Image (cartoon, rainbow, N blue to C red; front, side):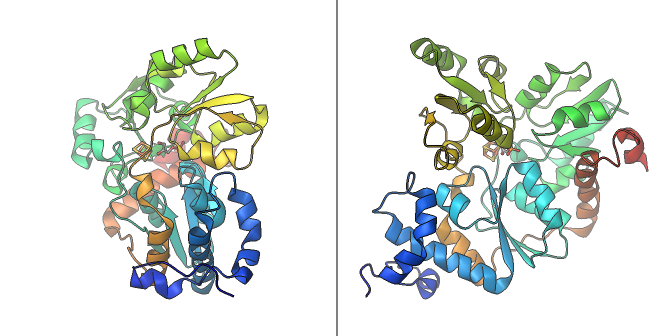
Length: 361
Ligand code: 13P
Ligand code: SF4
């Protein structure tokens, strides 16, 4: 018996939605148990048919969904096949056997997947899902930096366009940035474009870091004085920050790391109360599995990550839109910078073959 009819004005979506019948409710019960601390009972009859439609269509098309840690819990816990930080998504994309990759993340992540899987169809549900770091620097800016600092290697954060990566010696993410910078074995590197990530790395290495004035519009909003005040009012709180935060914010943190390292810190230490200094969905995603930990709000939302929704994932799979394509020459050069980063994490390149040597090979 149907007790909640499908409610949707979009023809593409409604074609795939089932009514929320008792049978569907029972079938979706295991999913509901995964997310019922972060999705309300009122929302579930509308969310569940979308999840079911996406998962069925995904199977029919031999597609996988790669979801960044900043996706909302319905996407993160109920439709994604691979979850993680930028590095984990890049590595998993390179190993996937699916024909189609749906990138539940921002555009630079979809470009990275396409670079690593040129033979696969890579789809992004919203091409407008950008990133303030990726838009802070152009390929010509990198060429200009090379003219200014001849012979100094260029390391670029993976949060950049393929055109910028093509001008780069090697990429990095917030997970591996120290190893990449130090692995080059040189006294000076350019680390572009996040000035706060660059200053964080500078605080941990003797390598001289030349930065670029890009910033993450989400992490730059956090203020050190708010953290100081919060800790004074509640000294038991653990403060865990992403390295895209300003230096005085990082100085107040008990731990700093990539999104996945932040998650591991909370899982391993299970603090009674934790303040995650990063995008809001991280707290919701972890709290669904760690009810014993209290997550402090407020947090900041990334408007680009939040462009990806269950509805546009379903449309993307149904219509095979929007396909990510790259200019082959740019792609060849950009791919080398990403592959060097991934190889740098494998035992065959370290420590027997120094990174610099591998780059020149
Ligand atoms: P991670 O590599 O830590 O997942 O960070 C990506 C990102 O966009 C953070 O704002
Ligand atoms: Fe870019 Fe910041 Fe959004 Fe991450 S959180 S995608 S760095 S704008």
